[in-house]
Image (cartoon, rainbow, N blue to C red; front, side, top):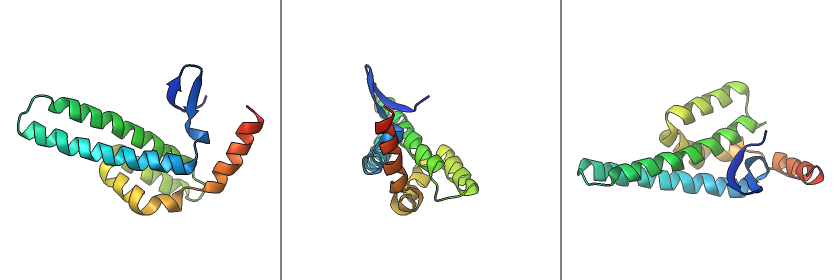
Length: 128
């Protein structure tokens, strides 16, 4: 079973074979959009403005994209051991915004491995 991010009919974007640079950009942008939507939704909610729930709901969906991609990167990393993977996954699930900022700004480069992507991409091309 493959992990599918976006389904477009018979063709889809497979997270496993997504370029780490593209995946990293999606992670950073989704985290930034999520934080902005949370701030806007919270401010609108404090002012009891109608439509605040739409911002907060959108922030939830964008956060789910960020969490799914980040957990995939952490769980498939060969650079960190099981206990550190568990720590990152629990942190991303329960404190996604705070841990996400730490992950994106300081630790992502240490966790991901570009050589794994190159090896998997060649395997995918041969067995497609």
